[in-house]
Length: 203
Ligand code: ITT
Image (cartoon, rainbow, N blue to C red; front, side, top):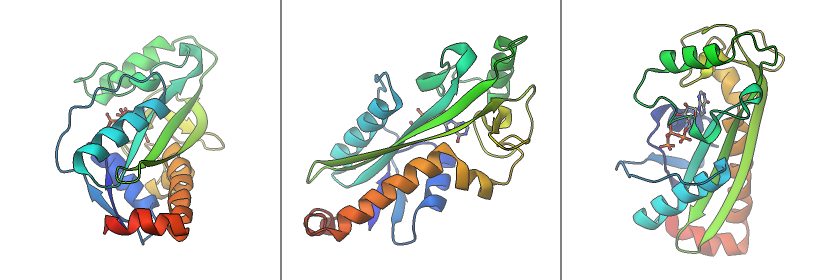
């Protein structure tokens, strides 16, 4: 089944592609669409992205809205993770976050991902969310991953997502948990009589 991934972030696309079961043919979004993410939650924003792109392309899409939630900063940067110091390299943004946490004992944080499937022909919309708990490191460590990975140490690990192999991140991450759940829901839908009628047209 062919599904467009409504993201402009190629790192996300690659991670989602690796999480997806083989029978899903995931296609990159070709256009750059200006979508205003005015929601207050990850789920609202993922729904906005999936609906806008799905309606525009007139084909089934999946979308991801995600970010880093830091307890001692009242959830910041949260839904603003991409917009925080936008235009600056992530090294600067992470330095700023470490500075904001200077002297702070509570390093608890989690990554959150809302994954949404939307089929414009049937208006079927399904969502699944995932989190990975962890803590903020004392300094930037590792070159792997993307975004805030080099300052996030997942629970039960001593290394950051920037240092850990991408295969491990793809097993335990917020995105892995959200999309494993979402792909399962889509498969259940496809196997149902209703899903055959809805999704056969997706090619
Ligand atoms: P799209 O909206 O086009 O999907 P985006 O990068 O703007 O791309 P979001 O609005 O969902 O996506 O913002 C997510 C930001 O949260 C992302 O740019 C990173 O800064 C951060 N983030 C999300 N998942 C992450 C991960 O797995 N590792 C590191 N940082 C992550």
